Image 1 (cartoon, rainbow, N blue to C red):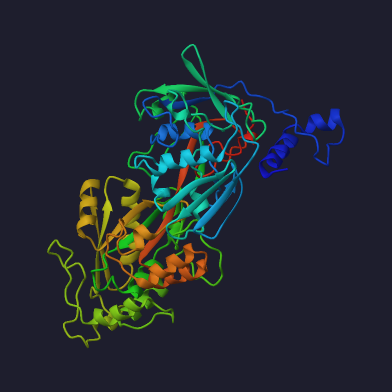
Image 2: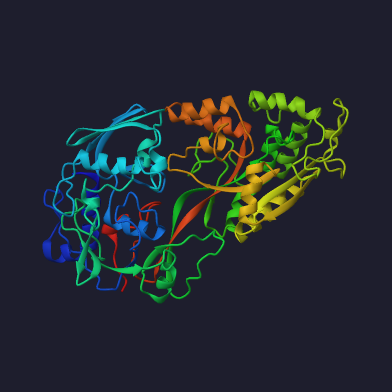
Length: 552
């Protein structure tokens, strides 16, 4: 009995407990009989937005509205859990060495049409994403060197470079090969199937679904949208019953009325990036000190509206390894001591920094003024004498030793407020003076690209394998600050190859090339009382729908 069938058997047992106890006697402990669908079907209205101008191919449709719809209709080889692990869905089992993966498909999966799932269908779906840069899944497959059907039930994928976390990227929707050209919805395997009656579309329970039976919601009305941004107004009127809506947004939705909300773990990293051309900020000890001064827990509870999980390391969830020094609260005394030691060119706590940072520690003492490109003194007051001990005076005088201009996108009020709180934490350190530079988005991006900043408040959507190379590699497209470290590149490559991930975490903490702040959570809004026992996962609003019950 496979894992999904066990889950649905348990759901049936819970929902039908009273009936079984009074009418059927003891349940079948051996589990030899298939579960009986005793869930009380809800007749409550349930509507989903459908942007008809989007493509009917789930791999190529890049509209946010239709992504939720696709989650009801299609499935991937895996589903990504709240802990960002890969749980089998269409894949029965797999093996791989990090570079070559062999996936064995389930043999009991049928499409809505009744056709059975084959490896050719998986290959066609994945190749559609791989060869179309407009696909929302394109970036997940850029390192695939070969993709083939070994036989009807086996798919082999070979990568250019090792990535033991690659299965986390394979929740890409699978459809029947050739069906995307039918002029209608591509043929899927999901729990619902689209049905047209007299020009109106609904989603109905998929009688071929390998997962067994659904929960209380068996009928969904599709509400057609003529604009991609019209879903919220339809939600406010009650026509749309469920949708995703970002909370930490320049214009967060004002949903009003009777609404339930569900938060999901996320990969959207809020962080502080440094200009590594600044000789002080190029010092790992200075960056460690600035990180230690921040109360991430408070930042998430206040300015980020309890819609974020604090993070010291750029992975979600934070690792529980006791050997790692992870503190989500502020340590101002420790930050002050680290800053003194770093500015004197000495080690802080005995932790090793990267070789280039140890060299920078000596170079920083001889540095002159550093300009951020706007003619201002953005690195503070430097000693003209390389042997001067001016840095030792930090904490003993009001002299500004470290001056920082913190760049932030002014279009987002939550980020602006967070930047102000960060600046206040740093200004509480003796010798540190921070000003917040608020700029509209287009100007903000232009300044990042030109390197016109000391520190910037950034946000990036990572993939579920938490690939940090765009941020931390020398040629990374998001490496605005010019960070480069061979030790870091080696640590990332080793972790992706399956070697100790803790070694990478420690390298990151030693160098602190960026300062992670938090991972923003996703938000799903739904009509009040529509669904009980609702537990969506990061990329699936219909996860565990077999356990849904209706309160209406």
